[in-house]
Image 1 (cartoon, one colour):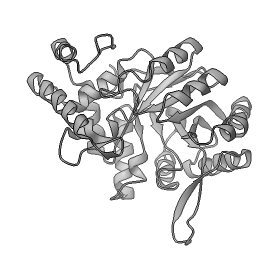
Image 2: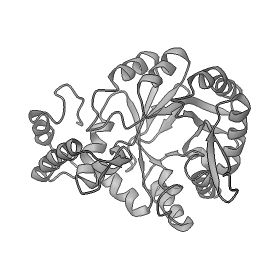
Image 3: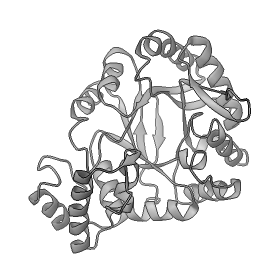
Length: 321
């Protein structure tokens, strides 16, 4: 029987096996209303109970807090039963006023080595499965000339199994795939029900080079979970009128077929043959359950056919079976 997290898939060239759906821990560290430690623990426990074996974090999420909470969870478990990914490119430090922790970009060699050491300490492991360069959009020279060689060296030394880059854009990720020996990429917001074509060239390059694709933010920052409600968030900003109108049209089709909007969004993203795993954030055990239930919800072929007939899903897009 397949666990709720999905049938395991290959992730990268180094033999990692991850659940089809993974848990993104950003909501456990950085929220307008931060969840408490007990709720974070319950969230991670529920994910594990439901078969999720892919856990993603980063120093940026709460200036190390999400990593620390993941570490507390792993302290009483066999961490080798999970694929753990984190990121480099931001160093946790004190703010100018010295009263709170924050992060600053740093893709230097010394910065990357320091960040890796600190992440190992916070997560409470002695090695890492995946490490991504995190949002190097404005730091290409430093990321490719200083940060990337460090990750390649640590991979060769066995401290990291697979290395990659995580970004909200396809263009620079494509350069990384073409110019390095990365194993895996994390693409956020760029392959969703609302963004269906921007990643095609990137996905083709990944397939040609054996690079695995992990998707994040497939609910586009919230609107594909909440629907076209007032104040809905699209890519971390208030949704425009055109986005609200498109989502409302998708919702209407969902209602006609009894399909939950988040289920359609999660299943559409996971259906692409280039995609190995889809990360879904959650801030509570209940959200983990709701997300996985949506991901497994039976969606009839007539539902997808109507979305295509209305031009809401491209006729050439891969669809769930």
